[in-house]
Image 1 (cartoon, one colour):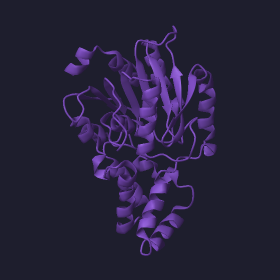
Image 2 (image 1 turned 90 degrees about the vertical axis):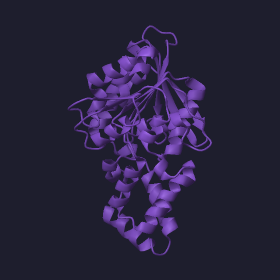
Image 3 (image 1 turned 30 degrees about the horizontal axis):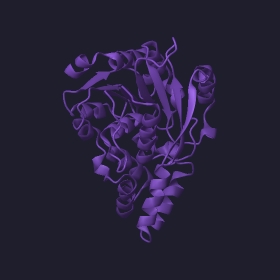
Image 4 (image 1 turned 30 degrees about the vertical axis):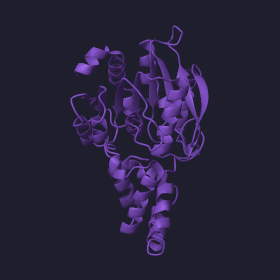
Amino acid sequence: MIEQNEARKMISFPLQLVRGLFAIAEPVAPRLTGRAAFALFCRTPNPRRASPRAREALRVAHPFMMEARRHWLTSDYGHFVCHEFRPPAGGMGRATALVVHGWGSRSEHMRAIIEELRGKGMRVVALDLPGHGASAGRRLNMAMAVAAVKTAELWLGPFSVMIGHSLGGAVIVNAAVGSIEGIAPVAAERLVTIAAPNAMQHVFDGFAHHCGLGRRTREAFHAQVEYVTGQPLRAFEGAAQLARLSVPVLVLHAPDDREVAPEDADALCRAGPHVERRWVEGTGHRRILSDRRTALQVGEFAVRPAFLAAAQ
């Protein structure tokens, strides 16, 4: 499940070959071609191809990650990892936050937010989505992601706040509303989305255009969403989902985000007065995570008294 501008990163062989194969197969077997497109869409980045800069970032973050207790959990879709951070003073913490990274990312990249929440006296559970970080596999879809969040809640929750970056923002919203058939909603007192997309339809459309999918293949591609989740693709619209929630929601976004348009943040805010948007200028899609302004706003919102949060 990828952002529109990340489509190229998940295709590991020449784009022209992919388009050619889809074009040849569509007239003969559009349903099979649609399933193949969905499998490619769900393919997660190969960790062995990480850039030297990314490997150095992981090396620097290693001592920090060693402070966490690692939990290997199992959902109906397989194994994944959660990292449990306790407050610096020890103990369980006054409340628990769940932190979820985005596509092609991992818990290490959420470090600034984790540290801020710990400094507020919170226990933090950082989830490595399936196919990412320390978790197993090379595949991820929304059902797998939501199942991981629900399993984390059962073992390590409840969560007073859930925070998600990029795809992770969409994941926590879907978990909160219970959008996946057969998976109960995850209870949280408030949500924070950071650079999150509004409509998954746009993400799918971007991928389909990039791969040159024809009409019949697109229909089969979209049908896979309902097959996997129990809901049609049009149901995965963040604003409509947030409108069904009554908990306070903070939407953080950068006006210069080139991967998830700022208009997505505006759309999320149309869900109702319980959704508050704040801009973090000059941080783009990824630098927003390490920016001190982001961490401070997440920390303040996470521990804000309930009656004040409800009044926003």
